[in-house]
Image (cartoon, rainbow, N blue to C red; front, side, top):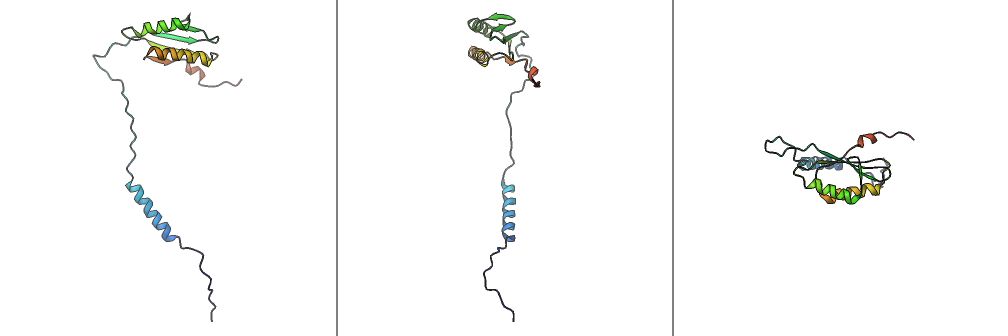
Length: 138
């Protein structure tokens, strides 16, 4: 005569639970639409009636002592604002290149960028960044 254990079973059979979870996972994957990521960008196009591009470039440098140089000539902020307004009134706005040197203060660079933004310059770019591509150990 065999003695039976009358204690309740503490293990639960997880196989049906795993089967149900896999079925639900497959149904969710099937019903989720494919993600479509698109970014609308107006790319340049070739056109005959587009205005001719002006190859004139103006260069602004903020040097190590926070002086402003407009095409190599030292200017103050009032002169810079006048020069920016003058270039903005041209029929074809020249490209404005901004190059702060590594020793230039953040405040002087930010003040210059604010003046450029306030003038409404649309053809603007940073130049000289390739110098800082690699960092030398000091």
